[in-house]
Figure 1 (cartoon, rainbow, N blue to C red):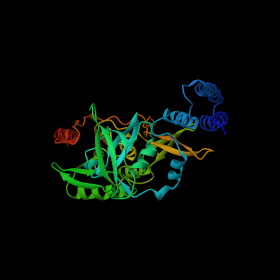
Figure 2: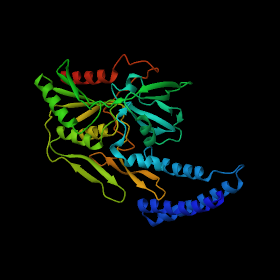
Figure 3: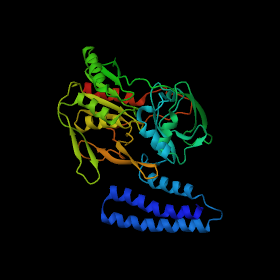
Length: 386
């Protein structure tokens, strides 16, 4: 088949695929009409490029780029996936066991949401907001979050090289990370001066709720009268795990609402729980994401906690794999979580009660102060003295 013939086949198939996706998910007649108008423009652009570009066009490459652009224009997590990427997702638990402890979002390149505490990425000094310009020499400029996260995985002991840019630095850093088996999501606790119990949640899992309950009981027995739950740079774990952990703090109420296009938002309630009753303060940063945000939103929305620190990321949505006829696919955001009151959470994040910024540091340096924790402790001391 000649390039021109392939182009005509694609021009027929692309509108059909687009109609199936847009018609299925947008559904309204007016939306379909608008979509048809854009498809006609798209067909004109393809024809102009094919007939007038200065050199012969690789039609498949152009079409792949168009589909990537369509998905990229939705949000940071939605993506068009190649057949190989679809196959990798469908493999499910077949992902390699080795990890470097990073979570990504997209902002021109892949950008670090957070480096998990104690992980290879954390030990190497990667921080929230760092841009990863390349993974093993492959540019991330047009790479999806799904593909980027897949490339980070590998056999424990194997190496991955990241090209990292921080802030306004002129030159990127080459960082070699050795993959390790993912550490368990273990909640730790200790009693601070003044009878304040400190709980650190590095990641959420199905056991996080039970761990929080056990640690909180231990701290209360040791004399703690108030809890600080540290969610800074906590971005890993299934969303349901955040809701499950929040149930330990709430005897009744609404944990969150979930919204899907064309449907009324559905509340997620608490049927039983409330084992943890101590007053609670949460610590957050812009690296607080996903399950940690749902956990924080549930407590704040039910007046069980306040927040000291930075605004959270606002990344609390569910993606669905939609397979396309050529074995490629769409990784599409199909539902999103709202606060217990029904306000936007995904894309907005949570505003802190007391805003305190985490200091910037140069690449390779470590924080020598902890202004967020210090501010939370000072606030609690003032309340106790009042």
